[in-house]
Image (cartoon, rainbow, N blue to C red; front, side, top):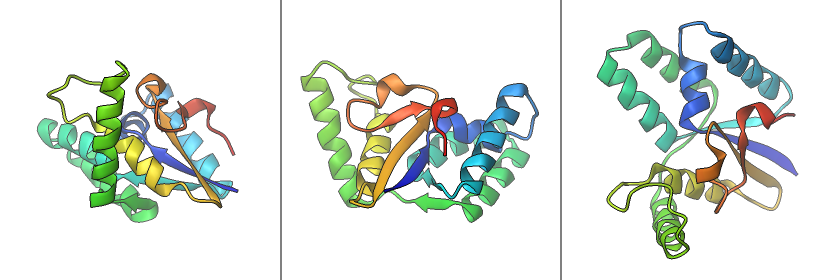
Length: 151
């Protein structure tokens, strides 16, 4: 079974950040290691949206260019109708269980992300979300802190 790693907004933001910091550089090195090891890396559209909106708000042209370049190199997972239907199901279930990850009025990007991971799971592929916030995702998807995801 092969591994598919979906990048949540946290790691995606670190990877596309042109500023060097120990955390950003470690995340970029981590990505290179996974790609070199043959792991399929996916940029979910919802994570792209979360990172992109902040880059646009702040006028960060270099970050936007890096995000666009990365999208050209990795697999991009668009939001589809089946994904949104599954996200709505996850949203409702999480609230019935008292385990919501956002306010009720919120769009709840985490539920969309978990639905995108769900859509990528197949008999021969296992989807895993690499994140900085495991707690909001583990109810419906496999998720780990990005540093804990390896080849």
